Length: 311
Image (cartoon, rainbow, N blue to C red; front, side, top):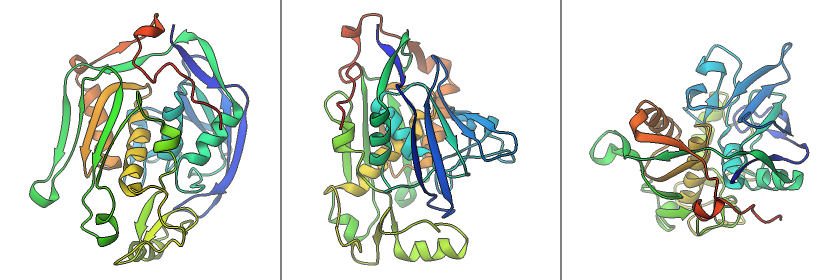
C-alpha cells in the first residue's frame, strides 16, 4: 500500500514576511492520518485553524492567501505557496503549521529552506492509503486574447508533470529559458526546482513599498531586476530560474486542492489566481476526476513511492 506521510518530529523556523516585513515564527508538527495540511494562527487570542483546500483561498493578488471557508473577513495566512510546494515535493499529506503572524516567512525566496526543515524533522509513513486526485478528462481555463492571453490546463496522465511558459519581454529574462517541463517521475524536485527564487522588478518593489507591501523583500530573498539586468551579485541559481520559480509556485498553488494530483499541468503566463480558478473548475466537474489509492505500490506512477533522500 502506498501510505500517507507526516513528520517524525516537530521543527521550527523564524523569518520575515515578504510583504509585511513582520517577524514570524513557524512550528511544523506531525499530524494524524487524514488531517491534511492545516495552518494554525497561534498569535490570536483564540487560535484559529485554517485547513488548506481550494475553496479556502481568499486572495491571489500578490500570493496565495487562505482563510477559514475562504472568508476574507476572517483570520488569514498569506504567501503559503512556497511551503505548500515543499510539502508537495516531499509527498507530505498531513501537517500542522503553527504560525505567529499573518504571513509565512519568505526565508530565501525559494522552497529549499522549507524542504531542508521538513527533511530535518524526518518523514514518517502512516498506516493509511495515500489518496490522489486523478484527472480523467481535460480541464482548461483561459483569460484574454492575443498579447493578453493566459491559460492553464490539466490533462490525464499516469503521474504528475508540469510545463510552464513565460513571456516577460525583458532583456534579462529573455536571455534565460522561457519554458520548462518537470516530471516528478524522472526529475528531482529538491535538485531541479526547490532552489528557484521569487523575482521582481526594482521599480515594482518601489511601488509596492509605497503601498505598504514588499516590506520584507531584499536581494537575500528575491531576484531583483532593473530595466536591463539582474542586480543580485551572485546571479541566477539556474539558467532558467525565472520560469522554474513559476513551476515551484504552481506546484504549491495546485497542492491547496488537498491531495496530490495525478495529471499533466500546462500553463502559459498563469499565476496564483488562474491556478486556483483551474482547481475550482476541476472540482466543479465530478466527471473530470476520481479519488484513487494504490494497494500495490508497483502500480503507482514512478516517483510517487520513493521517499526523497535526506540532505
